[in-house]
Image 1 (cartoon, rainbow, N blue to C red):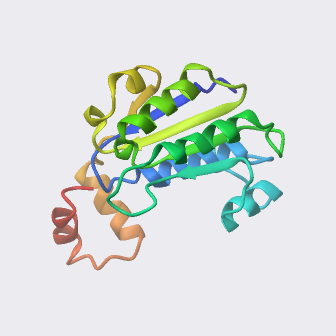
Image 2 (cartoon, rainbow, N blue to C red):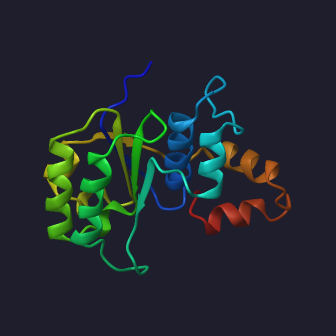
Length: 177
């Protein structure tokens, strides 16, 4: 319905596919010719997404795994947000894991979240929303992604070619994710 909030905070247990969901949402919103509830997969925008070079998508993660997202990285968002979308649609910032923002970076992000710019969507992904400052959480529409039911998880494993005998063990090892 073309009525997205300016910021989404996707929360849920580790391993349930928050990053995949966030990417699929970005793919759908940036697609020139979405088919129903999915991206078409063949337009210029979809091809750019698949190649990882879409000019209207900015991914922000720690420079080194397990480290903090730094203030200079967040400042690059301000430059990105200030530009017009190159393909005329949304500009999307995927920030993962959001709890990796250090204090200075969180404060810099707050400025962008307080002054949303047109068709710009922030998608913050976190396993630990309580580690984000309340000021960040309060400016985002929160969407909890729960663990799938055991039945749904087993169906998914079956569809992805898992050995039926090992599926219960795999699901247990992944804590249901």
